[in-house]
Image (cartoon, rainbow, N blue to C red):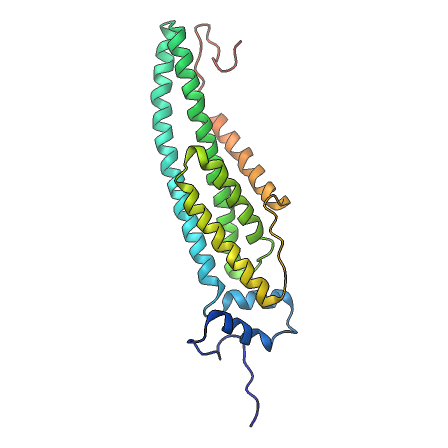
Length: 230
């Protein structure tokens, strides 16, 4: 009887566990190039694609939450800004100093939220590309590093986001481990990789520019900004 040859995952029974599917599906493809192996992993009927799609959906949900948080911070900023201007115009130095300090803290949180949102948007876009081209190592590893960094950064501004981001990071890490087992490759997931740092630096620069363009400065009684005058 001729020996049956598997072609990808299509010939594997759906009742077999995922790990068994990967093992049997790849035994006949050991000589395939690494890039093709990873692409087939993503495009198979069960494996990585749904997991990546779930991660991107969860990231989109967190981005929407950051948008909502930014809206609340903007409302708070506008309220404090008006109080600060009123105190400055009334030459109430004690109140104007207190309000200006509070305003500076709100703006600091706005920058953190803005930077985090931009960073998550960038890795979400990259992960959506992974579902098409299977570029795992250069996309998922830095994404994990970015998520860990954003999770830590949001500790003050949005502590409730830490749980969800931790879950997403763990899910992406699990995908990397599965791919490594399938392909026999070890992926080193440096938390502060060059690519992760590049994404975070770009997000910080964009956030800085947006903040500078959108935030009005409170003048002091001499018409100068209370944030820049001595």
